[in-house]
Structure formats: C-alpha cells, structure tokens
Image (cartoon, rainbow, N blue to C red):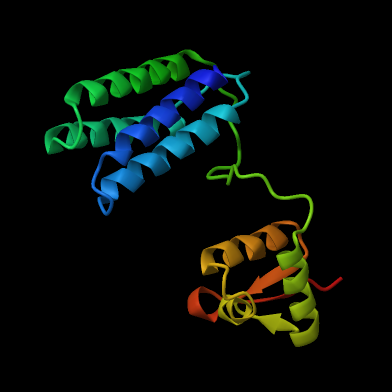
Length: 179
C-alpha cells in the first residue's frame, strides 16, 4: 500500500471536514474512521489470503458518511465526490491484496512508548507512595493535563507491565505491579 497516497487522502479528509460545522459529530466520526483506516493500512502485513477485514468495513461506513455529507451542502459535492473516489480506489486495492490473517482482533495500533516521560515517572512515584490511585487523584497533581492524557499515560504503563488496573469505570484504581 502506498504510504504517500494514504497520507494524502487522510489529509484531504481532514481539510474537507474542516468546512463542516464545528460541533457536527460527522466531522469527528469521519476523521476517526479515516485515522483507523490509515493506521490499519500502514500496519498490514500483505503476505497471505484474506476474507473480510476491518478496514474494508470502515471504508463502507466512511462511504455512507460521504453520502450524508453531500446532502448537507457544507462543502462542494464535487470535493466530496473526488475524495470519495480516492477512498473507493483504496478499497479496490485492499480487496486485491493478500492480507495476512491475524489471530488477534481489535489491536490498538498506536505504538507503546519505550521511554517514560516525566509525568509518567511522577505517576509511578505517587503509586509507590500511596500504593494505589485513580486518574482524578493524579489530575490534582497535574491540573494542566487532561484526564484523557493521563489515561493514556496509565494505559502506556499498563501495557508495559509496570502497573496493574483494578476495578472498572468510576471505580478503576491503578497500582504498581507486584513481582
């Protein structure tokens, strides 16, 4: 898969959706799907046969969103059609490729950081001191950092096997992994 083509159509999707109303959910959903398609296509191992893979489903969903966007008159239908055709070309190329089947589904394709940032080191220091903590408690230490970013820090530390997660939803605590 041509990386430059994938980056180009993802950039075009972002530029196109910039013209949508700011609070329009379709603006963000189309970008999210475009990002997923880009990430999955860039990480594909094209060696073995495939059946239906997730990026083809996402391309179908995105195609439907393009149709909705055309009827809203936020941008020129020609611009939407042009980008829609490029994604259609991508879909055709994917259907022709031989894709390696992965036994693991819904894998997060974002890379896990190998080094810790200062904030993550401070989180570990707090966990050593308090034994366990929730995101909101760490947020008090870093008021300038969003909860979402702090959750990503916790997720990174969790995936690296440094901490463990206890509980769920509002009762989620993190603590240093024993052993």
